[in-house]
Every structure is written in structure tokens, then in C-alpha cells.
Image (cartoon, rainbow, N blue to C red; front, top):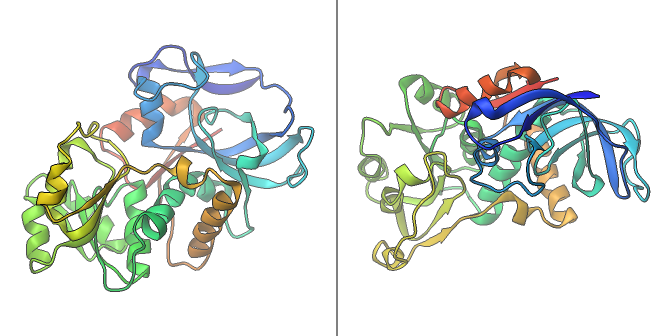
Length: 325
């Protein structure tokens, strides 16, 4: 029996229950991990609330990201062995001392990346990678707008965008978060609670606007985000921390300058194993180079998962949050 955090009914943070469960031996194509750290992400709250349906029904073990040591290997697994250090993004099963998962979703960790770093960055960092390199390929001279620039994905986007030679504008909710965003690569910050961020973007850019807007907020930043984008630019809506964007008349994209709009998700970008490995390698390389650091600003014990979710949803966190067994 091992400790895990389970959801027996969907709802607020209080539905997360800390209990003991059995972890089976790995089946064909699976591996079993002893986990050293687990990531906490906004997507975890969507599953907990029932906004995203659980693929395994109820109850389920929460969590979608982690890192640990391989302690058992199922039949047919050839490229991962007992003792390997690995990290992953896999729907559910993450908030537990041990877990079983598909071997083809595990990525071996280089020696330069710690378990805690990996658990803090696999989902957020690979999200930043596809947004900056594939959804819109950021290049020197571009101007990008990052909403929630002091958040987990936001801090990585800001650092990496800066390293690619872009001018980074970040929206934040407080002066402290503005300082944090600027320390992590944002050239300009906008206090979105006090300022009209679209008007401020126009002012900062001298009317040229941004090449791409990266928006993990959703409802409260739409449609004003579209007023921040140059003609033929890109709106990348990758999250809904304030609630989902409602259906909108697609004609608005034409009136705002023939804009492109997409709602990407990591699963599609890393569905093929070769894409998963390439995305993770790019992330590991940029972190190892020192151009991007992964700020782990909150750590909780596994049994404190309720508090971790409360703090995340109150916008009281910055950077990455992890759970430790």
C-alpha cells in the first residue's frame, strides 16, 4: 500500500482525499515508478472539478505530471530499465508515492535535470516549447504578449521568448508579480487589474501590436487579447484559468486583421513518441544551457494537496508548484 491523493466525487479542493491504495505490477508496455516529485498544474483542477472528464471514471488518483525512478518493468518494454530516472506527462495517477504508466510516455532525464526540476517543468515547459517553436515560431525581433507572466508557464515563456530575441510583454496581477516577471525576461509588464492591457500594448509597441498572444487565462482576457495582435498575427489560447472562452463569431478574426486563432493542447503536439522526445530534449537543452531556469516557488507534502489547490486557485502562487511524497 502507498499513499495517494484520490477524487471520489468532483468538486472543490476539499474533495481531494489522502489515502492508502494498492499499485499493481506493470502490465505489457508499462513501467512502475517510485516517485520523487509531482507537478501541480491548473489542468489538475479541471479534472478535480469535472470540467475535464476523467478517462477512468471515479474514483481516480489526481495529478498529470511527475518524475521518479523506475522500480519495475512490464513485458515488452525494451528501452527503459529498472533504475532509470524518468519524467512524464500522463493524464491522472500522478499524486501518489508510486505509479504505473505507459513506458512510451516516459522520458529519460539527463543528469543535469533533478527530479524536482523535472516534475516542475514537464507539462509547463513542454507547453512553452510547442507554443514558442511550433504554434507560432518566435524569432528575433518579434513582440509577444504573455498573459499571467508570473505563473508557471508564463515565467518559462518569458525567459525563453527573451532568449529567442523577442520583446516580451507580460500581464500580471500585482507589483510583486511584475518584479518577478521582469526578473524572468519580461521587458514590459502590465498590471491587468488596474490598466487597460490592450491600450497599454498599443502604447508600448507604438501601435505595431504583437505577433502572437499566449493566453492561459481565457474568459477575462477575451476578446481584448485580439486587440493586441497585428494583422495576420496569432492568438494562442492554451488555458482557461478564469473560465473557458464562450463560442464567438469567427467573423471577429477578420475585423481584427485576418487573425489566426488556435486552442492547442500538449497532448496533440507530443502524441507521437518522436515528437515527445524532441520536445523534451529541446526543453532539457534550454534549461541545461541556463537560458531558462525553472522557479519552484511552492513545495508541499503529498498530504497537503488540498492546500496546494487552494493556493493555486486563489492566484496566490507564482512559478511552479510541486508535491513531495
